Length: 376
Image (tube, rainbow, N blue to C red; front, top):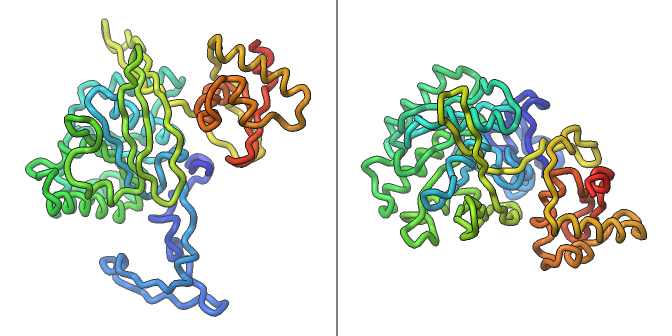
């Protein structure tokens, strides 16, 4: 499923792309459009649908492929030091670069945000990000009056340019005075998020901490139950700063495979002596329609590891006698991995433009590209 491209479409998606009444759509009844009953805005959330009308809901669309859905609530949680904020900022910068409006609530302190953003811009060779907005204070999202004031403040400052994504960093700092273990109080927090989501037809990304054991998010399951998706970040236990990003809840879509991120440090002498920051290591190339040539493919190259080089050589030989590429099983043998891990194993080569993938999940074919052969 392709990501929403704001710079191409030029318009913000409706509140819910799965809402049959969004943007003037009308339900069908006996082959004809049934007249829609007009409701006051405060009653719209209570609209009734027939069984047939439920079939008109559109499939999920993505801000970030397979990870951040348009107009939905997503949770990102992990222990301290798992680079949650760096990944959230990476997604925010990417979307702002593509033309989306992003509001980032920097409630845990904004002192290092400029350096983090400058590092991201340097890593991706990007200039200004005029549609990325930072708010270095918190919102009591469990308080109705505070949420109302925040929504009005956003409308005053942004006008008709409503946010496509609101990042809440973190749940704890925007839940001051509330108890994460109290279902009623957490329910009020979730309701505050829902009010923002409906007011702006926006996606929300909530950053949260784990329990001391690190096996689940803190507090009740209110956030999880209300979310479209939940992602967990953990340290891999290996060398360096590597962290694992995995999905443990996905509603109405397939769970993506886990990713290993390798945050990279960038020196920023223009900001001052000994100033540096990290970039999350999220790998993304601009999405393109099926069958279209990606203009960005091959612009980001990387050194091949010994395993990658050996596997590519094996696949080049296998491709010689294959029509339309080789199967996942062949690729798994070349890399010496379980077939279910092929997508994760080959992704770096795909991102570098050395390996091409075609077909559906169950019948994917792999072909070494011209660039991949040249790299050998």
